[in-house]
Image 1 (tube, rainbow, N blue to C red):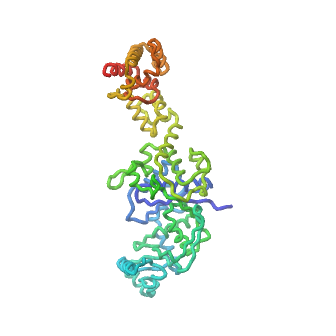
Image 2 (cartoon, rainbow, N blue to C red):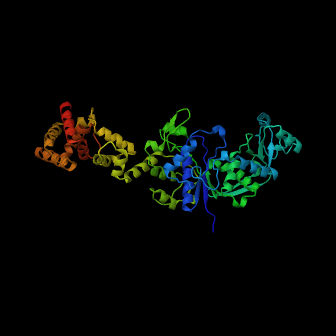
Length: 498
């Protein structure tokens, strides 16, 4: 029997979840569901200096809103608890000790001042300093100190870090599921810190240990982690876990709308679009807009994100989450970055908005109106808006009489024929008992026929008289919704003021 597919989404609670992180979570979810596996949520909070209160709950709420279901991990529990790295310190210390005992890692007592001095010396000679197989023999660590000296320093409480002893001449080779084979020589990798002086692990150690202990089979993460992957492969080797190492897939970057450089929060602020799934208020009280609050439907956002770096190989663009799951494969993810086109996100929102029934949208967004009237309002505007709240603002504007009129229409269409026709229509309306769109149109046609005026000659002028605007949705349905008395009043006002 083949091994169960297990993926993990492992964000850091350092602020709101960036949309690039949401895409990473989505691709992990799609692969797990496609292959009948499980998705874990692990919180990588070992960097306590960058920890932001509320960020973890924000991450969980974002995934829940989008329908990305977590099978195991923070908020769901499971057999590998705890799933917060800050609660797993003893596990990392135990594994760091395994590497120390095997001679694969060592204690380093160099102060930041000593390292800065060494860095400056190298720079003065025109080269960059690396703590590696060449330089470690000249530095203050357990490879250059005696066992007694090391023990005395530790017992005296002298600060230290634990570093990986990177082999001097070793080929690191692994296959990335998106980028194919990656080759790196160990001489290009420095002796990375595995345990910091505060006793907490770095990302590298915690990540590898957790992925191994939690039986992760596929690591799907952003391209920015590709330079770290050879180091992680070396750690798997150092622990003797290379045969059970997960497969790697490094996702392409999300690029600025114009395509040059990585998408940032600053780009979103300049462009006036969100890059966070939900609205976020930082500890200083500054708000950042969210896709949900801006009126994006979760189905539209999921569909939009799936296509940022992946395509199904067909012409189909609209996919439900279930359809995405069936169509998804890592092989169809692009290597190159994906432009973040907010207009495409809006297009997706329009498609999903139009798929919803008038009744469902009315019940959700127009609760202040009678249900019959709310359904008619939705029908009137659903095909003309991008966001649901625009239906609400259009609905509210319906019942406010115009205070200004489209001057271009007035100049070209407000003539004697228009005034005659609108006057006759206004005088016929009080007798109309069944005041619905079809009957309103029939009444207008009858009056125009008596006058010998064609409907096309007066429709724009009539619209301006009722709404103030020269264009808009179905005018007959619009007049039905506004109501007979209000329409008569508006026609009267237009006839006496224009």
